[in-house]
Amino acid sequence: MTLPYRFCAAKRPPEIPGGRRPSARRFVVFLLTSAFAFSLGCVEQNTEATTATSTSVRQPYAVPLRSNAELANELQNLCTKAEASERGLALVEFSASWCSDCQKLHGMKQTSPLSETLDALPHLTVNVGRFDQHRSLLDALQIEKIAHWSIFAPTNCTEPITRWTRLSRRTLEVSSGAARNLSPADLAAWLASLRKS
Image (cartoon, rainbow, N blue to C red; front, side):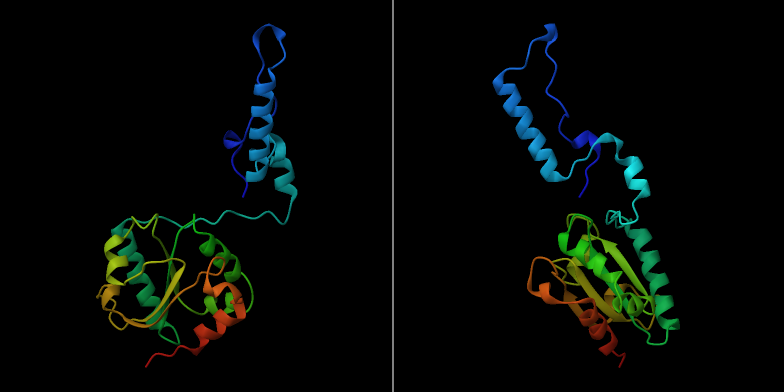
């Protein structure tokens, strides 16, 4: 993770009026903050040119934060797409940008064969914040952990998601828990095995 420069430690010891050298204590504090900044991945201010030319720059994982009304609208659109799709299924992912499992899962979603499976399956990612967003939905669907995937077979898009038929659900702790050994192929096979009854 690369932090914006303003969060990084100073590049040099603070200057002292009168041209005096910093005390040993200030120098040690400077060394410790520099080491801490290095461990967080802070970079020099002039890395924009390097970043722009690099083809392997990792983009931060960002999940759009929606109001309840915006989410209801997005879910209705998802339902419409699911009903028009061949399988009639929809994937709803509950996630947050701070979640390490969600970040790793995001990378896995870009990998074949999972990426192809997701291209054919209508899906939506819901940002739960720090579990303070869309709390009533989380409670109704009994979602206590993220990254969480629920597969629905909606039949009536005028109904809320809480009335949709949920075929399967899975908490995917791919970096911190039991799902650590799952591969993109495993997830693709799980999604492909689900059928609308």
